[in-house]
Image (cartoon, rainbow, N blue to C red; front, side, top):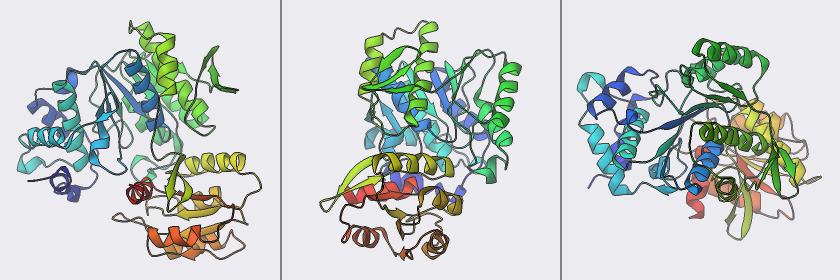
Length: 410
């Protein structure tokens, strides 16, 4: 019997091809399920997943049946499609994929991401969810998720230099791609972004006559955080969650204005129950505790280093790092490494990975002690955890590497 992994592997060879023609045709052949589900659309360089997690958890606490679509997954394709925090089953995922397969024609082969995206819309419509929280895959304007003509809210979490090979090599160009999710007279919720990006997004908002909320970060309190006078628990780690949680609350406020019934108690409950794997998450490996975080671009790496400095002041950090070739390896290493730290470089399995030797050479220019080049993740874990004393061990650089770590910990 074909598994979802086997089915989807057939489409990996088609790579990334931005554009909406194929996905629109697929959805049309599926009965236009995307028009049957109210949706919140979330784009941004960093913070998308956390914001989706907060919004979904709050809406679930308010009594709604909530679909959520995210990418990438860490361990299992099922992670990408969930209802009320429960991953789609293997059986239902295969059923959805087979429905999509019926729409495929030889001269219009979809990408892997387009197949999964179409399957998610079909599944959410079949399951009659009250609302779907949809995370973009890459960019926004030409991303396969960008098929919502009337989203309940278009959310942009942040803008920084990432995926410049496809989205443009300036913050303005990248912002223009992300802003493509903003629709005519629909609410737009915007996090803190650089001025160059802000000008581009503001112009798009003006062209669309959208109602915009420009969000300022919450402030830390003794028991959580406070945003515009509202106090709430904040279970996810890191200072950047003050902004992410505020963006989520601004989105919920917009939904309330549209008539959605979401009480303050539901917001507090939803916030307290929010979980988001692979981001500042503690795991255990052979009786050793490690911190894992994607930190796959410079902005995310800076956030991680800020958390480390606050959580482990004056501590030498042992870093296990693997980075894809499409990322700014030098920038990421410069963001996370202090001269006294130790670096263990690894390949990212089954992906276009930066050579661990190259990462080590980049790290060597920063560190006092030469980095250790490791051939795989288990050997890096053993080396980093050996005689560690009280040094924290942190794995980062790629969400795919984080996924490999979670597989090992299962």
